Image 1 (spheres, rainbow, N blue to C red):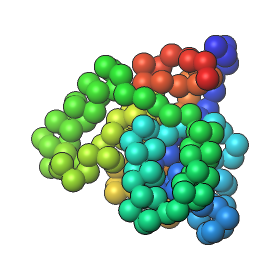
Image 2: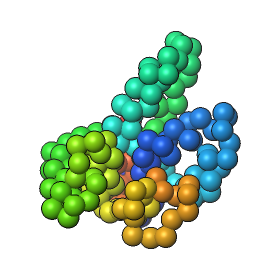
Image 3: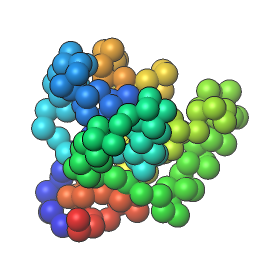
Image 4: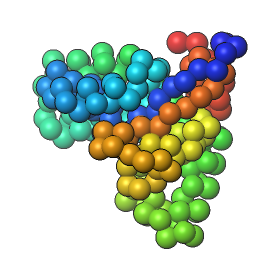
Length: 162
């Protein structure tokens, strides 16, 4: 485990997709890279699920899906654990009480990704759909910036080896 504070970025599916498809569409990827500035990239388990679903839905061939799997293997994936599941349930209840869209079932994926950032101590920092607390640019909407004393994250905020 690292002793100094580390900065990391939790991406939602749109941001992760833009970075993974950088060779096909350079502008969004460049904008995200500018914001990330070399920070470690973290994604929720649900982002991986959504990216795989998107490839299947689009009818990607085996070769392209294998490329996606190679790219996904490079990401640090935050897996669900007891504390993350509790955070997600609390977030949904809070959003429902406030009348916020993240309380609706249709936003289940966004809620898990938001809960991941919150669980990692980020809170909604840079986020789409008006959740963020800071001014946003069009390409910052899907990013969360995290600081921690761990080098690799899980949803219980402990370091784990790869």
